[in-house]
Amino acid sequence: MSESDNFQAANSNSIISSSSTEQAVKCACNLTTHPMRAWTRNNPGRRFVSCRGRRVGRQYVKCDFFQWVDQEPPHGWQHLALIEARDIINEQKEELGKLRNQVSKQSDQNLNVQISNKLVEKLNEKNEECETLKRAVLVLTERSLLLRNLLVGSSFGVVVVLGGFFGFYVKA
Image (cartoon, rainbow, N blue to C red; front, side, top):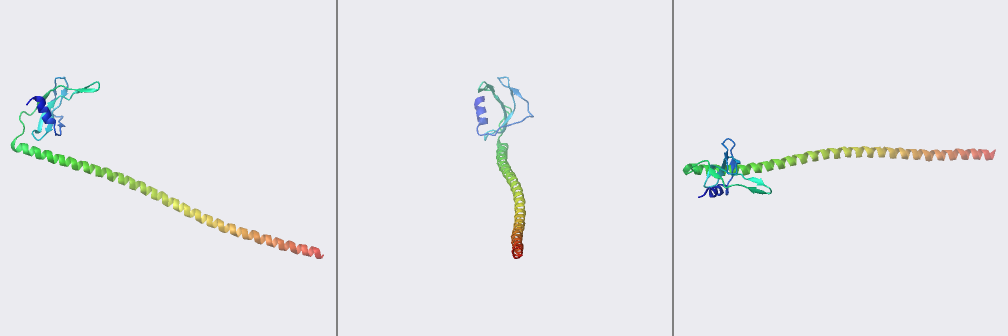
């Protein structure tokens, strides 16, 4: 199996993670490579280095540099333990993603509840204002009726007094 075939085998259906504590190697492009970890079924946890490539214009160019850091692939119980650990890690990552989504949704719901509570408070304040204004309108309506009745009564009294003076003046 050629080194580029090894690289493809390491990359296919794998989760690759970089480790910053290991030595960097230069590829044929003279770029620094960092050890990565393959999590394929055939090479679980096995470390390798390969060309990351570089951007040239609008294209991505890389050489065929590939090298295993771990010379022997895992085998026997180590192989099985690494596969099992990989599966557990993947399950935990999925669960962590779900929990993050739930926390995000809960945060959104809490924000909506806070906004709703503020709106309810404002609505209650406006209802109180409305009730106060209704009472004020009722008081003003009663005062208006009282003043109208007083004006009508006063007008009637003036007519009676003027009629009395007119009657007294006509008799005299």
